[in-house]
Image (cartoon, rainbow, N blue to C red; front, side, top):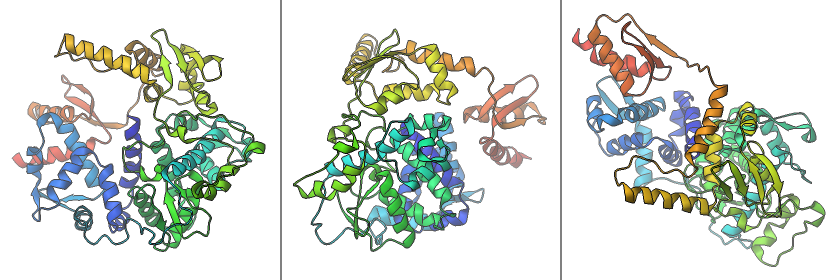
Length: 508
């Protein structure tokens, strides 16, 4: 769930752009590829089916390519590419946006893509850095921002640009750095996947682009280009526009870019940048286990004999977070028992602070904290805007390998006993996940939805056709067969009306 969150957020932003802006984005092959990678699977299928087909495709044929039980996914896929103006139709046939089609086809065939995917430096870097250094550098930068948000005492605050963005995005409030405090939105932000966190800030940056006199298309093209670059390679700044050079300087503050110094003519994308538009593992999570605690600035003097560490000594000494390469480890640290007792093998102040958002912590040792998930601790998190799904996703993402192994063994035994079992794999015991959800329901006794009510049908057949379609595609929220009424989501209204015009009006 968390891994898809950033895609939904980015797609919503792209769909809200004017068609003229979307058309400008499609001038870049790298941007076309990035947008394609962010689309739902069925949307990708339709594009790949049509991209090498010179002729328009009948809309009725689109229905025959998908099984009936996948109708909801089909509707969502078509809606997404229509909103992006990648797919256009006249009610009878559909065609792909010619510029998007041309550039994506060029990417797939490797023809005429220019410097859309960056310009690798032709000369060898005398201070070349390796992937391990880039991972540590990116982790230092990003973890420092999150430590600041949870209130860890730091010897150096994040840059002014980062602080301004945290205020503008509503994640923190306050004037001076020392007076800034985290908001409810900030609490939710801390439990998100790293990709979702980065995109949250990048989208806020995009919204400020015009006030900063930056071209949003230029900014988006550069961000999407970063997602396609190769980790560990250095790229030239000579092909970047003035807007992109300004963006380059800002992205260094977030750990997405490494430059030895501001005047350097080359830059290195970090893992945070190269995974922007993919599901690949990034630095796991902002809260995932730094292996060393915050060190005093008086003791941070960095010396190194190898050229990679020499080039990064200034950045390392200026940050208050000391993180070794083990920071990037993917192993989880949390064990939770069926009695709601929790054990986290970590000494990271950041991870402990995040656990404290929804766990009642009881004791702390050198490399272990213990606590209990209680009704009060969960309600406190819910009141701060954190959802039950976010808490459960966090526990699953950071589960200890032994907990994962035990859950897999239990599931395999169930399959061996009954090969046709419908029971799903549970990493966290169902009694825990169900109880957290029930505690949320105590606060969510009244739910509201925006949508449209359909009524006053001319006959029973018309009602049955539209009601069945709305239910089939998953947009119906309520219906009353006796009164011939049903209520659909705001997003589903257009689909139901289009279906009515296509299926019912033709028979009249």
